[in-house]
Length: 230
Image (cartoon, rainbow, N blue to C red):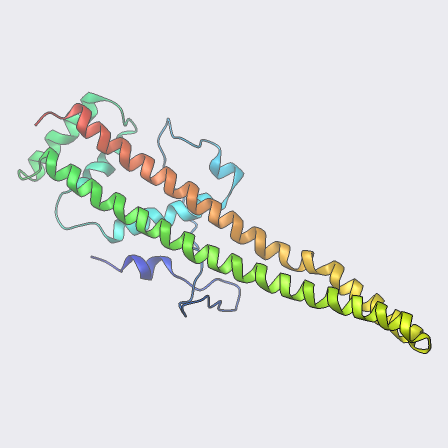
């Protein structure tokens, strides 16, 4: 096997800072500019247009599959042959691919291909779950920081208003204090919105990339079941 799936996916964000969630592992979403070839009749046709991060995550899923490609001819080589043909629901294509596979490796069989398909799909599911957990942890951490800061500033404003009523001689000082803190309070949402939206976009991309990748893998697996008689 080439580099491990974890090494491929877990990278430090290109922000100049490392983010450390609960558990102590550095976490970031994948950064990858690879454009992934998809089926002609793919699901989620407009997903990449609606969320540019989908292609990034899809590209890394594909590289991840490459990195765990088992030795010899197995389902992944068969899968790439079908994808290259551009037709994932045709008996002739499957039979031709199967015959070619048997020529390359006479140990190839339908049960072996289907067993290998389960392995690759399970790895996609593992990585999707890992991203989901880590992304949600980071989003929760950001939201907690935001809420703590908003609570602190809101409480400070309320205390200042009470002091202003009780101590008239401090009115001017307190009014300036209130104004300053209210300005800070009004900026809190904007301060965190970019980070929140970026993480949400990539969580969505993680789901969409997972769905598209597993859909392709399942289609080929279903095609084997439907069209190859062994």
